[in-house]
Image 1 (cartoon, rainbow, N blue to C red):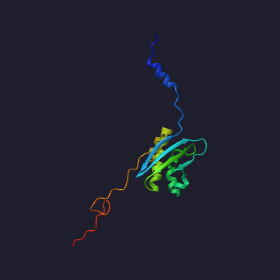
Image 2: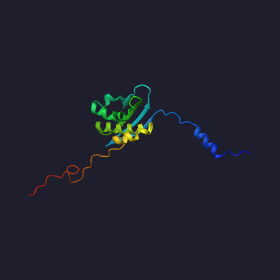
Image 3: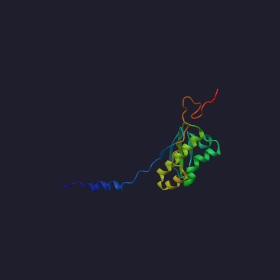
Length: 150
């Protein structure tokens, strides 16, 4: 009678290769914007789709397009990856920054070697600044009504 050893099971698992992933997904946030990003490895030039529209239509200005592309430019991966993103909440500028944050996090899942570069550029840190809530008795978060002596 032969008793199977635990080593044989571990050896079997180590021989198996990881299955090829269809996409790498990450979430990026800024203010109240949330971007769900999927990176697909592509052989031809990377497509960039945001909320089922080409990125150029969703972000009309060059500044917003540059913000969205910054994570790729820092790692030189724009030709090998396609982006599909769903963004909701916030304004257009914070959506672009949330998209950049999500792309940077997804690039790390594709290749962890880019961590040092992305961290140095500041794309992995979630910018937590948001509008401060209004307090009662004040006009805005900190602005008090004009004071009159009489």
